[in-house]
Image (cartoon, rainbow, N blue to C red; front, side, top):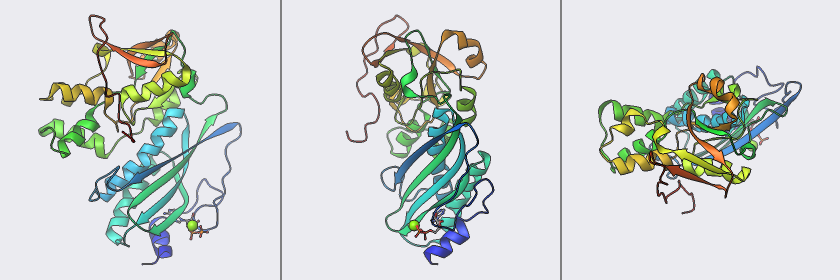
Length: 312
Ligand code: ADP
Ligand code: MG
């Protein structure tokens, strides 16, 4: 199979929303009137971001999901995607499965693949997504203010616990194993929530590198301190029942790959946000940019490994 056959067979769909999709030197897009474009790109390398023998269908899903999550965190509607992929060989079944995972998720969120690049090389995937958000309503990291509540869209830590299981650092079984591996391999981008938070939330980010690390980015960009109450941070069943409590705690606070949204909002929005199913986990106060976690007695919980640092 040549590069062009791969593109034609697996990555070409008739353009529906784009003026011109796959097949020319560039795609042509017409954004809706009055919107701002939100654009994001991510790179996934074999052996670094996923196991070399990862299931291709899961990989197609996850590669797009992590990008849609970035748009969700901006409050943007996903519209278009570009896929740059390096493949070691033209393995028809692998590529077909990857495309299946990719397009199933793309269809669910009305995202159209409009272009990309295909080349031979060590397996690597880079996806660019383009979304739309009404002008001025994008959810930014620098918008948190003292007095805001801090909210989390769902429990964190299961993806990292699933990874710990695969690496033999903990032994999960039954429903816990299933839940954690599903989180790790098939994350669900919180697109609908991000959209519902427009004009309601202030600072927002998706949890890709760990709750403390990512909330830390909001704190830094906004010049505020985030104070979390450990008791109020939601715990999934697999986390509550984990045989290694210290590992479970690290996963909740610093585990990556969950793709929940953490965001701040004024107190006046409490009712509306609670109705969306998010958990109120703390507040924003004046102070040095950073994140503090307090236990039920109000003591600061010591925590050093504040997330996953790609260069550590
Ligand atoms: P060019 O050499 O002009 O960059 P290419 O031969 O790389 O063009 O690509 C031909 C067309 O196929 C372009 O429209 C490009 O966007 C699209 N394309 C290439 N690879 C992919 C891919 N993996 N997924 C979607 N579209 C792709
Ligand atoms: Mg090209």
